[in-house]
Amino acid sequence: MPVEMDRDRFEELVGEALDEVPEELLRLMDNVVILVEDDSPPGEPELLGLYEGHALTERGWDYAGVLPDRITIYRNPTLRVCDSEDDVVDEVAVTVVHEIAHHFGIDDARLHDLGWG
Image (tube, rainbow, N blue to C red; front, side, top):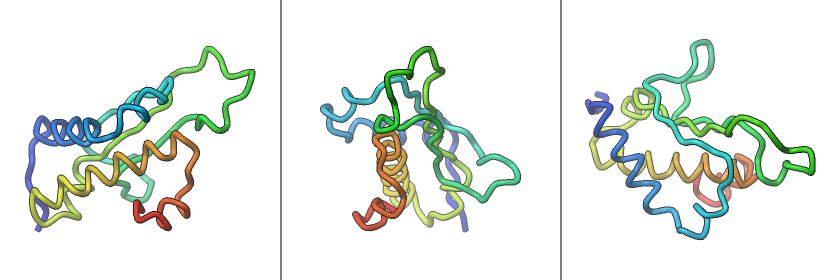
């Protein structure tokens, strides 16, 4: 049975997960916004999180004047895969780190190797 949690509490957990990211990494993040949405995009596989943008490793001399990259954490899919609030806390933390890693150019295969899949 999915965990029930209102959006405010879920957003708090995302904020707490961000607080655990080392300050040195947060300072290196550039032109990125982190959002919470209830559901992943329709017609797509159900996602827990999504990174959209240009990874830091792909930005060249012509990177300018673009909208911020987006990291979106999806509340309902996360709640559906968890059995307790503690599971949600853990899953949100993993998802936040996973999507931030994409901002730094780390792909899914490497993240799985590192245990952040």
